[in-house]
Amino acid sequence: MHRLDAQQLVALGAPHKGGAQQIEEWLRGLLKGGTVRLQDGVVELRGSQPVVTTLGDLKRACGVAVETVKQGLRPLELDHYVLLVDGVHTRLLGPPRFRVSLSRENISGSVGRAIQVSPMDGLNPLESVDYDQLYRGGRVRCRKSLLTVEPVTLSWSARLRLADGKERVLAPDTPLVLAAGSRVAWEGHQGLLESDLEVRSTSGREVRTARPGQLITRNGRSLPLRTGVRLQLESSNLVRLGTGQTGLLEVESRAQLESGEVIDWGCDSTWLGRFMDGVPLVLLRRAVVAELEGIVAETCAGVGGESGEVWRLLLGVHDCFLDASIPFRAGRCSMHRSAQHLLRCLRAFQDTTSLREEMERQYGYTVHTADVRVSPTRFASGPLRDLLRRLAGDPNLNSELLAVGHKVPCWTQLGAYYAKGQAWPWEVTREIYFTFVDVHYQQPGP
Image 1 (cartoon, rainbow, N blue to C red):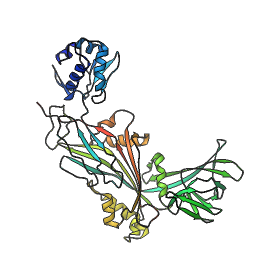
Image 2: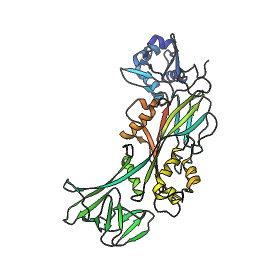
Image 3: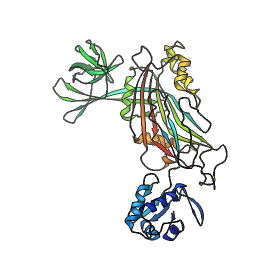
Image 4: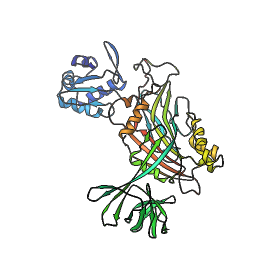
């Protein structure tokens, strides 16, 4: 830690008897370059050894009241990360190195401008990157590194929570009544029950109607339900048993890989319910990485990096569940060999391979309709945070933000993509991106 006393602050140009505006302008100029030149040499403000001072030292250096110093510091708190703490060290962090951020224009089939590098003053402007094309210009590139391609076993279970707080296992052929407004799926259509409906449990998340009813779809259509049709339950629904007891019938999914890993999407796991029960699935997981060439250096600012030096920065993770019957439906192989055919295709992906382009080229599958949801900025859940940190620990990546703190700010995009004339999706995907990631910048020497 480099502690600046009043004498050093005076040597750095502290304005004597200046007002809050003068103090702010002095500090802004001091912090702008990201480095401070001391007797021992150039010190990076955002390096491993923080540069700190105190309100008392600032007061003595400027010869003004503490309140005047505070007023001069406050405008710098956001853009320069000044930590203003009474009686304790005031940490002076320089401007953000630069931000690699994700725009939220990318909400339909990964075709938006997804990566934007925002340099600070003194750096040359950098262009944005269209990550679906995966390459634009020679300085900033986006790659999707292949992490996992494995078959998935998707299973469902139903749990009944009674109003008295007790839980019970829902045995097959149990009669019950689903309340009006219950969320169900029928032959690929999601919707709500128009009125109470008598059903009998079967297995997993399925129930069979004991009376005719009506399903109101998301677009307002009313579909008649005959007696004996199978419905798939979604999320939690209010039910009433034959004994008169009421409770919540909750369905949960479990997506497990051959390696034993369980894919936990949390509340987003309900999207997997859009697949038809019994369909084989394959998981494709890729790390979204930005490559910055000749821009970023691990060395202290002012030293610069070698020509051609590349930083690989983890921006997020793309999880994709694919219907493994696609090769069979495309007439490429038998149903028995379909999953292995799809696995071979996905495992041949390179860092710049586009999933949509390859699925169209290999099997003729394109997206005809899509249901996409973008979540606002939030903190990553525990399992997801662990995954991102584990990936960021790759020695081939430079993702310093993930090594500190307990919360990772991120936003997510989910989508279910359908082929023309099909009621069930051939792809359900989730992409998680960091809101921003700070990295070192390379500042030209004087």
